[in-house]
Length: 99
Image (cartoon, rainbow, N blue to C red; front, top):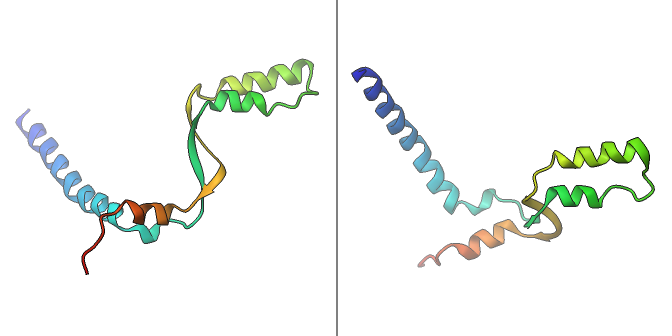
């Protein structure tokens, strides 16, 4: 029992030493971000799916499409159609560096 606690503590420390520099580096390195991306917004993927079903669909095909939409989450994050610059947004959020 004692060995497993020491082992768990060791794993936690290793994870912290590996993850902390990565997280800190990711927070300050905006150059890795793209200059164009679809803007995320809150939405209902299920409702979006239902909205995209063609109006002329009928019978078993319509029922199958609706069942497929039911598999989508009721709420979540959708992307688009607006675009933005993630790199510029990241740079704007960083504190100004002294020269």
